[in-house]
Image 1 (cartoon, rainbow, N blue to C red):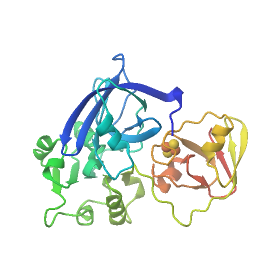
Image 2: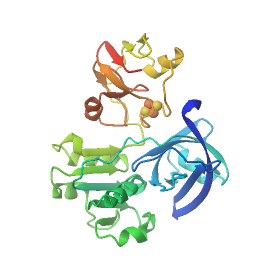
Image 3: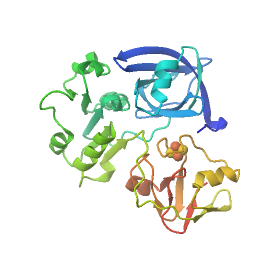
Length: 318
Ligand code: FES
């Protein structure tokens, strides 16, 4: 995995702050103090945490001066190595290669009731979203589950807020998503980020609600289903004026890179959204975690690192 040089940033690690028994905050700043690309609530950075190891981390704060980005990282011994690299090897002053902020989990621009559900470190993108909704004059609700009281980020601030419920998962009779979601009207925007089991519970508990009002953020690739069989297909790149044959054993992205076509990418596993393109014609078999298939189809988008044509041909704005 790597970043295209043309779109990456070099940022200095400016501060490391413990924020719980297994959580640290990392603040990255521009090397010369210059303004950074703007970030919006819900955005994440792709960070090369060790050579060749790129991971996605949501911004836990939106810096009003636009000169730094802050992430919160849970040290996961059984994880995929990114959090261990940051917790155990990061040194203040080190330079990290990152993407510009990218937002696959934006707030709806339409005012209305919003309910945010965060599980563990998955609360990270929801915190700036919650603050932004309040700054817009709205009255959002935030439900935040953690294993112990010490695991809550910004515990002192959040505990004072009557619209926030801090829920310790080991407490008897802690409410579950299935108990809470029916309490909110069908017209409410519901946002969820947390472990896979929580996202699955959210999907189950929101069955029948309008898909456009359901917002999920995932940072781990979803397991492929046995129904996913790769077959060859044709891709027409409208802007490049090229037609490519995609064999069963390669992605559209791989063929584009083989052919010297300039395509943006980062994770290559369907989680970061860097390779998302506009679909002009054709039906897509979506296989990423960036957005639900219905949302991709509504927006005419697809990720070319893992999604494929559902039929013989796709026409892309690339
Ligand atoms: S490169 Fe990350 S979703 Fe495709």
